[in-house]
Image (tube, rainbow, N blue to C red; front, side, top):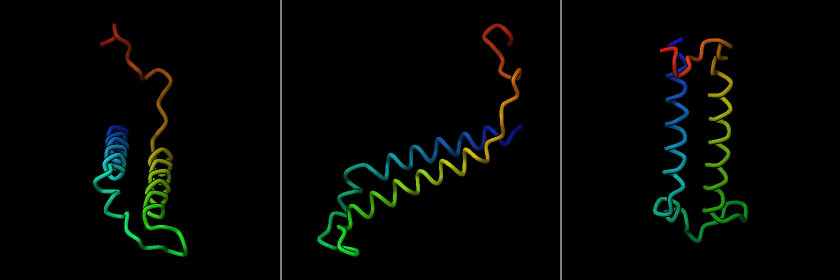
Length: 78
């Protein structure tokens, strides 16, 4: 059961890292007059980041073990 908190921490890290990589100071680094296959570099960066976040979320979600139906402790059961 120790695997679940670790995966949840990974999900939090993925969220924070994804948000940090989308902040304007870092995104502006890729705002150059360069095109890849006719697509501006900033668009390629944002789309690739978006795709990697989706794939990372899917992998972590798939690896997350299911919760047992009675394992959630309520407010008064501590």
